[in-house]
Length: 310
Image (cartoon, rainbow, N blue to C red; front, top):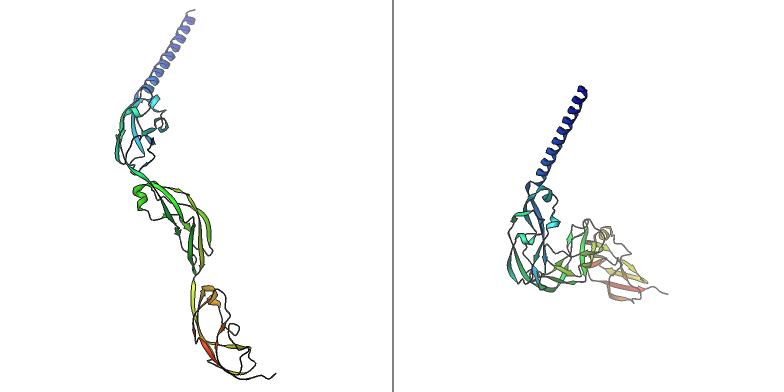
């Protein structure tokens, strides 16, 4: 019987100890969870009630930093979305304005306090809205393949409507497209591209344009000296002076480098000429893309001695 009572007492003492320990741990966790801590949160700024005829041109901050103090259980559940700052711009006028920040602008849970707001004041500069029609400038990046060049760039439409702060819009002379890569190009390019604001508070109508970039072979000029002249259509004896011509031609590099002039390209047409002396122009049979820059002589002396009898 004595042993049984000793066992009961031992068990009760053990359970009591575990219960006390659990209670102490629970109290400790509660105290830890409700102990005040500090936390910094970045809160984005959103503008509301912006006057239709004004724009912000000098926004020095996009967010504020709140130093919050409160129980850990509350602080740990907060995020920037819960504390978004809405700045009311109703009644703002052109020029500089300051907006002091206070705890009343933020919705924070009961038990949490705002220890510090950085910066404590938002400074903004407002400018009247301006609209202008400006030409579109096509911006390129890179260079075409060797032997090729950019002949022309076109944008359609050629001009767009620009809306933005008057101070910025007045300084513009054109609106640039986003860069079009022409590096190592041998063919023309056509595509639609957006327009670059270049970091300014601008909007465009339309905001995309159709761009055509014409890529062509570079022009190459070549001299042909002492080219022998052939004769066509002669019906009897004749004499030609001089018998050769000097030509300076220009055209696409590849075509010019491969060009060889012969009887099929350079000739005098004597068909139907009667006996006697004549001044005859040179006939040339060349690719359409080749242009004659210089020809010496310009005309040739031809003497028809006698026609061939029929």
